[in-house]
Amino acid sequence: MVTRPTRRVKTHQQVAMSAAKARARKHKAVLSTATKRLLHIIHLVYVANEADIVPNAYLDADLGGDELDVIELAMECEDAFGIVLDDDDFIGVAKVSDVFALLRSKGVDIDWKER
Image (cartoon, rainbow, N blue to C red; front, side, top):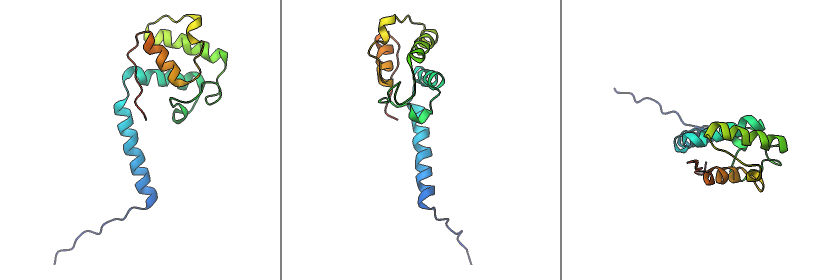
């Protein structure tokens, strides 16, 4: 007599966790090196959880930044991407997506596909 191995049934929570892990693996494959670098810079400067760093997140209200954080972000971006940012460049930059747009306007090949 041949016995079949018992099949383990996953709970709803286990299925949800598996799906979340699969999305995380897919997310990591989509991001370019420059995008990863910028997200890491924002994470370090604003001491924010990586999950909170989304395109529509406001640098001040959502990530808890202030004017000094914006200056530090500008300096870190200059060092990391080899660009020069003027004082006026960050006027009007309020969201994470604005930072990406600014860097693209300076010639940095950076893009954010939806996480």
